[in-house]
Amino acid sequence: MATGQLFSRTTQALFYNYKQLPIQRMLDFDFLCGRETPSVAGIINPGSEGFQKLFFGQEEIAIPVHSTIEAASAAHPTADVFINFASFRSAAASSMAALKQPTIRVVAIIAEGVPEADTKQLITYARLNNKVVIGPATVGGIQAGAFKIGDTAGTIDNIIQSKLYRPGSVGFVSKSGGMSNELYNTIARVTDGIYEGIAIGGDVFPGSTLSDHVLRFNNIPQVKMVVVLGELGGRDEYSLVEALKQGKINKPVVAWVSGTCARLFKSEVQFGHAGAKSGGEMESAQAKNQALREAGAVVPTSYEAFETAIKETFEKLHEEGKITPVKEVTPPQIPEDLNSAIKSGKVRAPTHIISTISDERGEEPCYAGVPMSSIVEQGYGVGDVISLLWFKRSLPRYCTHFIEICIMLCADHGPCVSGAHNTIVTARAGKDLVSCLVSGLLTIGPRFGGAIDDAARYFKDAYDRGLTAYEFVEGMKKKGIRVPGIGHRIKRGDHRDNRVELLQQFARTHFPSVKYMEFAVQVETYTLTKANNLVLNVDGAIGSLFLDLLAGSGMFTKQEIDEIVQIGYLNGLFVLARSIGLIGHTFDQKRLKQPLYRHPWEDVLYTK
Image (cartoon, rainbow, N blue to C red; front, side, top):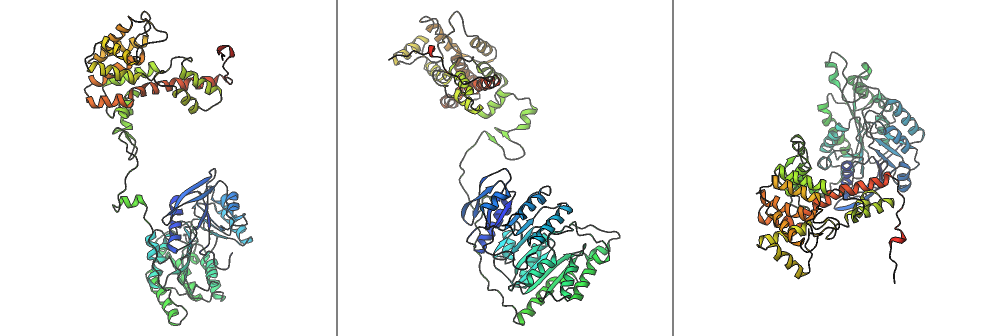
């Protein structure tokens, strides 16, 4: 066990099992104390590496993240404190690994419920190797104006009220972390504040004892008096009694052992800590208080009188000239986090993204205001979800059914079309799913699958202007523009695309109006007089029918319809649908374990 000061203004720690809030509180304390370097040198997160962004005052810093204790210790040889936020399941093993690092001097174990047998092994190893264990079941410790462990001392407000941003003259040790926060405040009210405070933890076998730390305080010149808060259960306080009797402590000790109310209960009571359970008269609070009093400690008659006893002891030392009260300083203002400042109404900040289609805040995500549970409970299909996320409204069932039909009919068109071919070649090159999918999607455009928007745009413009099919087609010819949605490499006037006929049949049965589709059919009739392959293809059918869906549903204004066509909503249907097929081709090639594709020479015309 160390015999003097544990921490200083240059102490740095390794933090095990990343927790944002306690680390940020440590860094805020650093800034409050005027430290030049952050007290957290590195973070250990098993299985992860990289950096974590946190704030050091107003400056955002990146703290290295290591995957192992060994790597972190090697990377930060000056970090000699190990703060362990692991769960009780792994706290012992990780703490032992830290103790075995030559650079680690102090290990603080936050977890409750660490098996006692494991704790005993840690204690034995630490004592044999002159190292310090604080905990388990501890909030940690603090040296005022220098360094603190995790959540010790609570919020910044409590730290400032307790004057922990600068050193005082009192050494404090307790079993309870919560009561430590309370006593820091109490001590600051009646003295010049603490110099160092430790919560050893409430387990039956703490890694270091009350007397261990009191003896340390006795060797620290800046500590002029000691305050001890014990509790019923165990016999830790008696080691302090023996130290007092043997004259090992020559500074005033003000002590109180909590739990005097236990005698009011008819049966034995287990208080909050594992060790707070009296196992006989000697372990009672009354017996401990009496023993401490007889050994020379200042012990009040009740907890209520504890503050007065501390005050009187401090004032006596001051009168004797043994304490020169610390000159008060004004700590810097800790910058408030933006999120908390916004919540409290102190600032307003512009947002960076606008979203109108979904909201994941609250109990469950919502699509266009419809809760996820309602979507499932009401039996919504893919078409309904698309209507909510794309059009921000619940379209009639015939509309969503039409959307689903379009997706099914356009999901795939065989392995020879350009999109599927690209995906197959990429899959056979051993690439991942996303790369294969994207390689196919990137071929979608005016020549492959991307003519739906153009077909809708041109058909709508021609119909709305009252053009005949003849005027429309000939006008496009004069401009040198091929009519989108017309023409097919395979289908003919006497061999129509069955998908087009299915879509037209559905629309005539369910749509209130099919005026744009009928115009597209008139255009097809005219183009077939020019060539037998100039049939209405699936792009033209979907484009014209989607116009009928938007106009006939009565749920969209003319401006909204124009915007939908302009933005590219309709091509989105083809992209969504064809993604299904492209993913299928990817899985198919990987399942078949096809080798790298090489195009055959005989299929290439080599020419000069």
